[in-house]
Length: 218
Image (tube, rainbow, N blue to C red; front, side):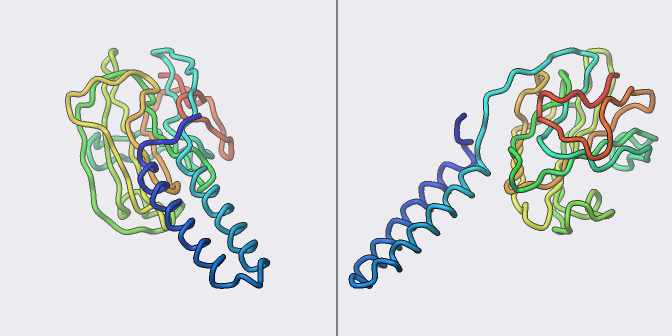
């Protein structure tokens, strides 16, 4: 288990601030140690909560070119046929994963392939399960074409709490399956758009593990 690079500076600054606050409390109330104890306990809990947001566990992925792996830890909230209007512009099978604040926030590539399209969209911060969040919220859209020529679209979507999307993607870049491609701070949602004949391997409400759970076969 390591700490993701996106959280290292924030955690270091937070630790310094909390130490200073507790030193001030200690010297401001020398005759009332209970105040210091409460302050220290609250600081520890707060730091541990933020720390777990940025955990980055090592994983072993079941690599298979026929498989579409989950791009994130979370829960499957959508499995439906829909029209993808931004790039593919045809009917697709959409699988959406909701990431809660307690999930690992690393995003991993569901398939091996080359990025043929990428775009960042500024936007709103509706709750991630809102029907319009996938088209109106801050988001990124990337399309990876597999070695078999199948385009897979992945969309990172910010939510009410997740107001910082990070990505490590550019068009023409080659990715391995389960390789890290981004990070959404404090959770949100990731959509995957697949061919209609994809064989879905998960159900609504099922928990996923990024880079390990098989969403579908294509």
